[in-house]
Amino acid sequence: MKFGTMTQIQIPRPWHETSEREAYWNGLDQGVAAEAAGFEYFWITEQHFLAEIGHAAASDMFLAALSQRTKTLRMGLGVVVLPIHNPINVAERVACLDVLSNGRVEFGSGRGTTPYIVEGLGFDPAEGRGRGAESLEAILKMYDAPKFPGYKGEYYNLAAREILPRPIQDPHPPLWIAATNLGTYEFAGQQGFGVIGVTRNSIEETKAAVDKYRAAAASADDSTLIGRYANNQAAVFGIACCHDDDATGRKLACDAARWYYGDNDAELNHMRFATAQGGVEQIRANISKLSDDDMIEQGMAIGGNPDTICRQVEKWGSTGIDQMIFFMQAGFTTHDQVMRSIELIGEKVIPKFQS
Image 1 (cartoon, helix red, strand yellow):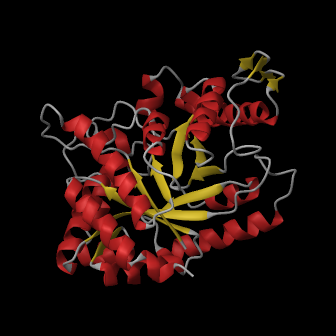
Image 2: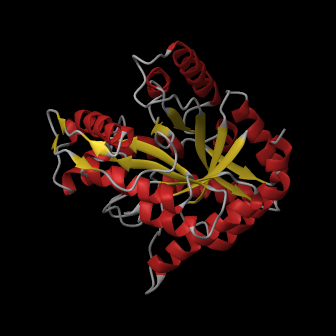
């Protein structure tokens, strides 16, 4: 199994004058530490306007900085919200990052499921799926050859131009999509995407979804693939904290998971899961029914000492995933606590799953 870490650059209030810049610099330090500890992937989401919840407005710029501090760590765009960008700009910036990282980009893309973000940038969320599909189709044509012949669809009319620079990974970086909806796994397999799920779904639900993903991937061919090759990998992310003391690690992970899933007073909290069934209030209500032990048992939080973390990773590994992603920079978890989590996982968890 491979291991990754993820961030949204969360900064709960109260803030001080340097809170935001420290969060960015801390994130870079966490990426460097993750590589040294044996992690293979660093994923960052794209967020706009959601104060406290996510300050990662330019994920490619962050990864560009991280790429200059690392040598092997894969740079995960998880994900680029395609409908709010010009496809040519996306192709150029992903290629730039691939050049700067010497071919380490993982290209996750999506349509954006938070209307507050999409509307704020002047787009209709109802057009997200169509815009996203057209954008990715055009981007991949740009990667086929330097001389892009142009593209005309329902949403985009792009002129023929030479698209520069060219990505190092040929014909393009590996493609991924996020799967908060379990049905997305099968769709991803059919179309050749790597898929990133979330431990909010149970182990049993995730195993069934991964099984469908594998079956769909096995039956996929050139007529169903979106990319020029299939990226058959399944991953899940979970809010996590590893601590020397088991009880402390469990408590920190559960507190962070509750905050992440909406049990917080952030002004824009109600916008975070606006498209989820029942919205953030329903998610908060569901979480409030769970004890910390329930959250650990169900995988909604991954926390404890290294032995406990190993047992949880074993459970998630039984679903057939290829990569476990720890989301450690969540809620009020401090930078020091994140760094210690990375260190402990590198020393005592990752080696047990490398064969």
